[in-house]
Length: 278
Ligand SMILES: CC(C)(COP(=O)(O)OP(=O)(O)OC[C@H]1O[C@@H](n2cnc3c(N)ncnc32)[C@H](O)[C@@H]1OP(=O)(O)O)[C@@H](O)C(=O)NCCC(=O)NCCS
Image 1 (tube, rainbow, N blue to C red):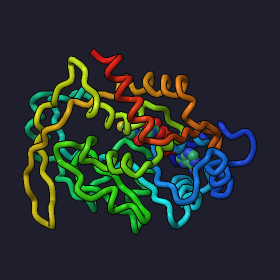
Image 2: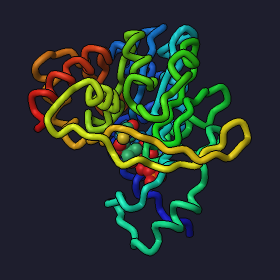
Image 3: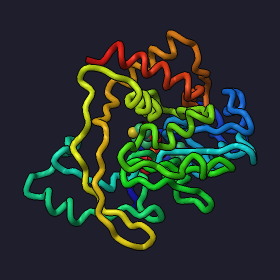
Image 4: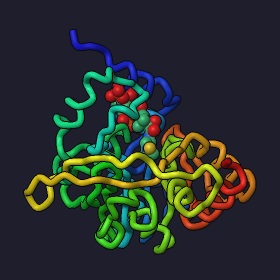
């Protein structure tokens, strides 16, 4: 007998009436305010939407239908191909393993490396035909639509979520962020606020070594970046919603959808971090 899929069973149990379909999701997204022609970065949890007919693939189809042919869909595709096991806490691994992990970890390959811990909607989107991906061993993004290349090109290796990243390109284009069944703890655009803000304890991270496949050749690179921290993003986002009312909220399936303009969010984030971080 196959093992029961408890998570999926729970998603079924969360639906009081009919399950979500492509058509009901498109209607929910439009009601939330997602307009045709928009450029939007989506962070998601499939199970939070309740059971969806066709799962992640259906959600991607619904997003693209709501955006139409002139819209551009973007998702995180973080692959964690610059591992530094001495920094790992969840889970920590024995020190005796560290060098083996550093040398044996697969190199970043934009066509092969899966998106890690971002959910099945993000990974489904990344792996579909026609999806483009930016080039970064830790913090790549994927996108599809007319603005995909301009969002993804020239992703800085040392500035993974800052001025040289697709987040800044989204900011310049007046893009939006859509949180599907997740809260601001997953709102990566607030990392762009971290780069732009100053606070007394702001500092860089340890340089990270990564092996990457570039034009078919394996090369080793070193990444110098900011020490990123999303621990206070939940509180930051909650304050943004309460103080500005600038986040549109509504149901998508049985989950919560949150839609917001990214530049205003990032600007608020800069002020908030400068006030609240030490
Ligand atoms: C971590 C996270 C992805 C977990 O969400 P999740 O809903 O549990 O996982 P997924 O989105 O991968 O969806 C898969 C789950 O959906 C459920 N599921 C399966 N089929 C389904 C269907 N047809 N309809 C709805 N749910 C279904 C199952 O519970 C499945 O989990 P399982 O395979 O372990 O049983 C989510 O909480 C999150 O944080 N998302 C945002 C990530 C992000 O963008 N972060 C950026 C900053 S770091």
